[in-house]
Amino acid sequence: MNNIEIMGVLNITENSFYDGGKFNDLKKSIKHASNMISDGADIIDIGAESSKPGSEPVSPSSQIKKIEPVVEAIREISNIPISIDTRSSEVIKKLTKYNINIVNDISSLEDEDLYDVIKENQLYVSLMHMQGTPKNMQDNPKYDNLIDDIYHYLEGKVKRCLDYEIPRKKIIIDPGFGFGKTLDHNYILLNNLTKFSKIGCRILSGISRKSMIGNVINKPASERLYGSLAATIIAIKNGASILRVHDVKETKMLLNFIDLIPSEL
Image 1 (spheres, rainbow, N blue to C red):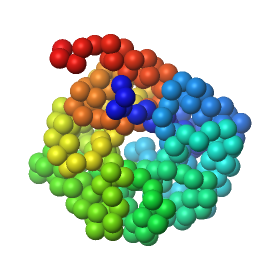
Image 2: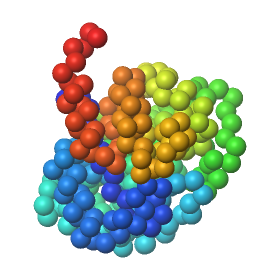
Image 3: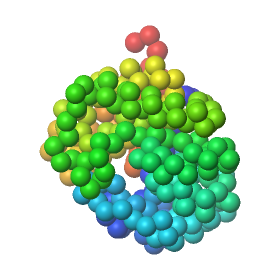
Image 4: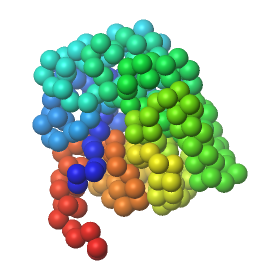
């Protein structure tokens, strides 16, 4: 599907919910990135700070120490767009020399220095909704009106970017599946994803192997591929055009299959 992009996840953390510790070694990280590129990734998303429920913040210096050699090595083999999953302007400032492309910020630019960094370097930005912080976000999340609350939050964040003269075409919105949401919240959100298209920005879906899948099929993260692909189909149908996934090859196969189905069906 020409309008859908696959964002392959490269976690270089010890404690990410699915692949924590698997790619801490530089050689393994580069091998995984190379495999994802070969498998059809359009973007590589690199992060060194786990955001699973209960996780603690990681200092910018620690993030840089892990991310920089990986980004440098990827740039030696590919010009693929690189997304950096961080909340820190310090991290982004350090990495701009490698021609990174996207700031993927789960806090939606709480570090206000990021606005100027993004503008000055003409970067894309992904703004995500999260209730609370990774440490406390799953402590009984509640909303007055789930869809309206998330919509107005993201709409406000987009407006702030526009006020800083960050072009709308460079702004991505992410409703934040699993970030301060119950199981019911996540599926209501998935079912109503199309409503967020009115904001006028591309929608990122980050569903891959999350507990919202596992709690339905009663499987651990290692066995959630098929549930993730099923949820991805719904996300695409409802307007997602960037898919943040752990399983690039299988997602690419899914998109190739969907391409064969007449659009009127």
